[in-house]
Image 1 (cartoon, rainbow, N blue to C red):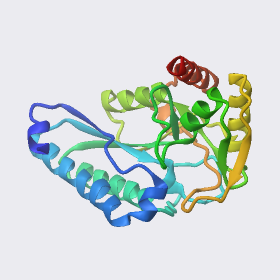
Image 2 (image 1 turned 30 degrees about the horizontal axis):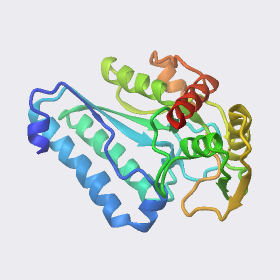
Image 3 (image 1 turned 120 degrees about the vertical axis):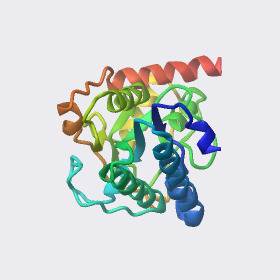
Image 4 (image 1 turned 60 degrees about the horizontal axis):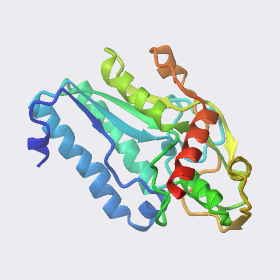
Length: 250
């Protein structure tokens, strides 16, 4: 199936994967099957088909709980979940194919991506769409842990721009962070969305989730130095996403 899919293809964006940290903790074997063996299938067939370049969706999760911020690509990885470990494995396999001259590759470490059409349903959905959907419905918002954990949220359009930049720009190979370089607590995210939505929602706290890291903030200086420029802001992205969910509700 993969062999047929890559026929005549010049560039590949590899975004497929088991993407939930809690789910990876519950199903580590399945996580490896999908995120490592699946990636190897694509790398092997892409190389054989003469694909020019593959850009891989990696993750800030590879940094783990190292308290140093911002996160730099030169930091020693400290993955603390099967999800994070498999993303780091993927980076190493891309580097191997690159070094052997089999395929040009780049790994983009996504920080916390959000945007319109993101699915708020299911046990492993991301915070932003869940919080927004709850806020527009005046339902209580659940925050895991004390809410003091911080994230570098980045609008999906800028992640798409980073991927396009990486695939189109000669010499952009290796590992790069993609984030805004900001740091927002989960409590502030929830409170801000409640206010922006004019919502009656209240924040309630639940037990901390296994595998979650405490603080995450990107240094995207390496990708910016190569020429990448974000086109949007966090505030613009949150407003656009909130408007999408408001329209979906109506």
